[in-house]
Length: 270
Image (cartoon, rainbow, N blue to C red):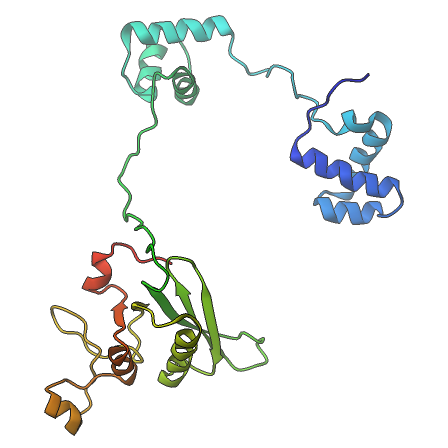
């Protein structure tokens, strides 16, 4: 009965690879590439494994006290002095004060000791720049639409645009590949989404001309500088982009990036 041997995940992985080498299924060269080791290091590790079995893979210093470990009596004396005189001081200032009294200790070492004893808590220096909002609770409440122009099929082929819609609540996606992020391509993708999942309540988009042309001081409108049609004049409406007009008929609210509507929803990051 040899007892139990505690191995790390890396050591277990190395054992599995060396077992394959021992069985003749892999070569040492293949093991070297798979483990990311130098050929010399892999060969030495494998030979130690063959001689000592699993024990040969375990780190030599495991279970041994560190040569740099502080004497327990010194640690206890420093913490006692901290409690007596410097309770509530930060580790950096306390280490400086203790050093003047002859209790030499690095401030990071003192910080670890105080954290371990529950005498100090980590404090955030600055509040986060942005607070991440919670995702929408319901599927279809908010869907992001964006396009990415890239050499998707290699540098030898022209650029194409991957247009994608992502549901905020579930991360369900639908994508379409087109030559460019045109109104027609965006409408085709939106229609595919409607046919498959239904009409979304709101779309989160960037401010490309497909979606928006001009902004009012108080809010973004999906309007363009083209002359109003007779139908729009009779209805008292301003001319919209074709995409904005289609969304209006479907009762889809479009929230442009960095708009007041987006700011009210905090950070929109899908």
